[in-house]
Length: 215
Length: 102
Image (cartoon, rainbow over all chains, first blue to last red):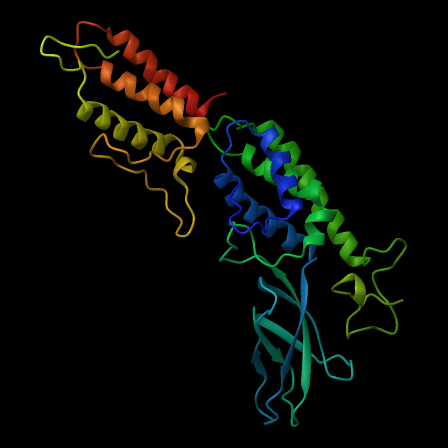
C-alpha cells in the first residue's frame, strides 16, 4: 500500500490486511477503489459523520437560501437541524445539498448553525483514501468495513477472488454493520438511551453525534 | 526458447518479443482492467513499448508471470521448426487462467 506521507491510519491498514488475506490476487489499487465506495455506503447508511456549520443571515427580509460548505472535508448529504444562537430550532430544508433554505427570511443579522450529515467525496488524500473521515469510525466498525470491502471485491466478474456466494455473505454482514452503526447513531452510542428527548436539544429529537445527545 | 542461428543471431528478435509484450499488455487490459488502474489522474491505459531498453514494465508482481507466459505463447505461434502450435496454445490458455482464475 502506498504510504508516501506515512499517514495511512492503523485502522485502514488493518482493514486492508484483513481483506488481502481473503482476496487472493487482489491489487491494492482495486482495493482502494472499492474502499471509497464501501465508506460511502457506510456513511450514507449510518449517518455517523456529521458537522456543524455556521452561517450568518442577510437580514434583508428577503433572502432564504444560504450556501454552506463543510470545513472538515466530505460532502453534505442530509440536513439534520438548524438552530439560532440561542439554540432554538429554525425551520429550514435543504432541497439541494449545500444550500439551506429557511422557511422565513430574517430581518436581523443572526448566526445560525446547521448540523449536516456527510459522506466521502473526491479528491482523495495522498494515499488515495477518503479524506477527513474521523478515525474513530474506522476503529469502531473495522469488521463492517472489512466485510464491505471483501464482499464488493468478491462480486467482481472473472477475478481470481470472484465468489458470488461469499460476496453475498460478506455484503449481508456489511449491511448488518451499517444497521448497527445507524442504531448507534440513533442512541448516541449509549446503552439504554432512547431516540428522542424532551425538551429537545439542538432543535431536533435526533442527535447528530454522541456528544450532542441529552436526556 | 532462444538459441543462436547460423549467423549468430537469436532465433527470436527483440522487436518480436517487444511486440509480444505489447500484445500481452493489451490482452491483460481486456481481462483485468484493474491491473492498469492508476490514480491522479485515474487511467486504465496499458503502456506500450517500442524498444528493448531499460524502461520498466509496471505490472504488479503477482501478475508478472502471466505476462511472460503470454509473450512466450505469442512468439511460439510463429511457424518455427523448434515448437508446436499446441505448446503456444497452452501458454496462451495458461495466461488467461493465471489472470482470471485461482
